Image (cartoon, rainbow, N blue to C red; front, side, top):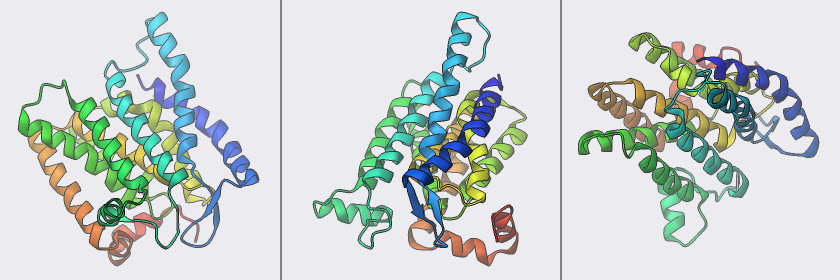
Length: 278
């Protein structure tokens, strides 16, 4: 059932370079941390490719009984697509790099308290609703239910905090998937989420070449894939450990610079810069 990964990755390799070039042409761009002008938000393109790939897969899966999609995809796709849409809302209605743009949980809380529009707060509330929707019905008892809910939300948010350098989000997602698949000796995450994963991996090349910027749509997409991967593959104790790690990283990112921390640790710095333009 890796057909979703193969088809979506193939379509992404064919379509994304042309679409990104068109975004530059029509002015859908934003300057990155080095002042280079990149297509923005390319995360919307990744979701579009996934939906295009989903059309033939869904039809053949149902009509030809080819078993191309995992049965649980219906549940988790609601969260993946929903939070990507919320990220796109933030990309389009947020004020980008403006000096008074709310940042972090504290900034968005202050904005809401002051009666200002905070797309970050809308994104957080919407993600909570989506997470509560997809986690319900899994048969978890109260502690497990809360762990799953928090793990899904915080993992999605963490990937937004990581999206500060080209290719970082994609590398972290790939490493997490590799760790889960090898640790549990399973390919289920790829089988379940391959139709969304393929465009993210191909898009990583565009990010590293500094041709496109993911934006909230892409970071949310990658974070949702990561969160669902952890929930559906880890046991109860392992999910608690994962939640502690994700919560600690999120808290650190709220008060300190994750990029600065990565630059201070040589192995992480080297990994972070692999494939990136000098």
